[in-house]
Length: 92
Image (cartoon, rainbow, N blue to C red; front, side, top):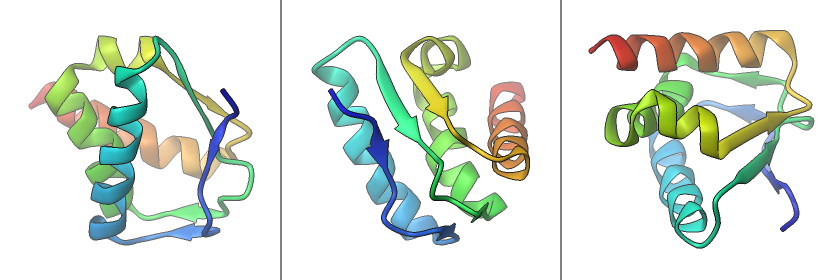
């Protein structure tokens, strides 16, 4: 399967993140690994990162998320926001 990409370059809506999370989780049901290409994403808000990645960690566990999702081509600030959201939710 091709890498999943976002249509927007600036990700900042909890509603959009929840929709994206549902799509990604559905894709994970049909295969063991899923790649998300973040090369077009310039920025990601804390709320988007939390709703997509943080809630996924809360629902599935950090081990599941890190072993089944592969993030590629992300800039440092995007990765940092995702890591912070995942860390907060894994500690909850």
